[in-house]
Amino acid sequence: MSATIKWYWFASPQTFYPLAGTLARGCAVAAALLAAAGLYVGFFVAPTDAQQGEAYRIIFIHVPAAWMSMFLYVLMAGWAAVGLAFNTRLSAMMASALAPTGAMFTFVALWTGALWGRPTWGAYWVWGDARLMSELILLFLYLGFIALQAAIDDPRRADRAGALLAIVGVVNVPIIYYSVQWWSTLHQGASVSLTSAPRMAQTMLIGMILMALAFWLYSIAVSMLRVRCIIKEREA
Amino acid sequence: MIAAARCIVARDLLLALRRRSDVATALLFFVIVASLFPLGIGAEPNLLRSIAPGVIWVAALLSSMLSLSRLFAADHADGTLEQMLLGAAPLGVVAAAKVLAHWLVSGLPLVAIAPLIALQYDLPAPLYGTLALSLLLGTPVLSLIGAIGAALTLGLRGGGVLLSLLVLPLYVPVLILGAGSLDMAAAGLAPQGQFLLLGALLVVSAAFAPWGIAAALRISTE
Image (cartoon, rainbow over all chains, first blue to last red; front, side, top):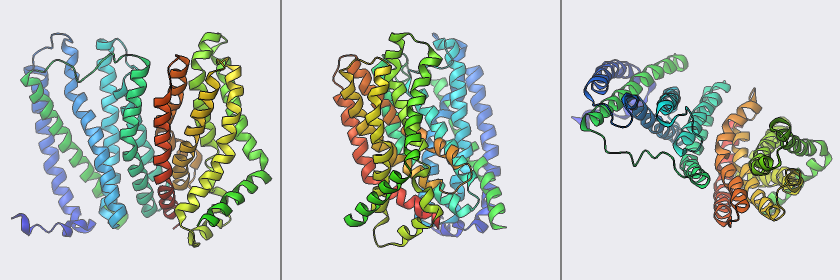
């Protein structure tokens, strides 16, 4: 079955356009169903946390959003690299289609983190935490990518310039992450560590995985819709 | 290859010498930014002493970024850049030479003038060596990374503001390590770890950034 799928055939924007429409519809429906299930599990089934009370329930949005924010940046840089290396139009379009969704998830992760931090840590924003800082810088990297592409009128140059920036960014992300970690440990002891949190209940994990899948499918749906717009804009 | 690089460095230095005000502006900017903080924060000596490393480094970052937009702009405007692209010398070498010249003009004077700011902030005298060494290791990295951004934003509208958005997030590791080395030294510890990491950043960016700059220049001028 899989041998009969012509992968290269879909590398052309014209033939990918209808497929993107089908994928967008299917993934949007699946994302809505999974999000409904995930939110139900998160808000009604999962037990109240003994230490954090009800405030912890924001992790069902926060953690999947943070996962997606990092995953989408790598994916975007990957598509950008493929576009730069093989000069395929569709890859570059995918990279530009993914950027706004990634930026949105980064913002959601920061925002929900701030809302969770207020009752739990007692502050919306804590400078000492490495994760907060790396996530903030990730947001700036996304915005830089979007701003650079928006500033260039020629789409071909915009694609290639954005690709180079995304690749430089993805090389820098681990460096930034570790430097921020050293920075925060040098100044003060780690006040909050997510890795040493108590093991979570089974239902919490199920809710979080359901939400992560929903966010994943939402990302596919939205980026497919956006890539359809870009195809129409450039190829029509 | 070496001859071409030497020629470009000499040419850029000569150009900078002929237009001394450009160099002076970036330096003056560094001094002014660093002098604004005490006015905004207040004259509490202990507070100033503790924020001095960060202030000096942030000012160095901004000043280095300010001079970046001039790195390729004039050559791009009068067509010299296209000649360099077409020339026999590898573009990576050309880019490295231009960055070296830019650092000699904008980074090295910062190293020289930073002790003056340190004096203003009443930084203890033993820290001056640490400050100079950290700037000496860190500012070339700023020039190298920043040149990629300068090449990408060549000839774009609003290039200067865009450049800061692209480049400043990538400067974060240098800022953290540079200011961190001073904090370590101020606490009476040896800042070797930070120096080694800054040196590693310098080596890695010196090895890879010229090719990134070359790719960016090709994208921007095609």
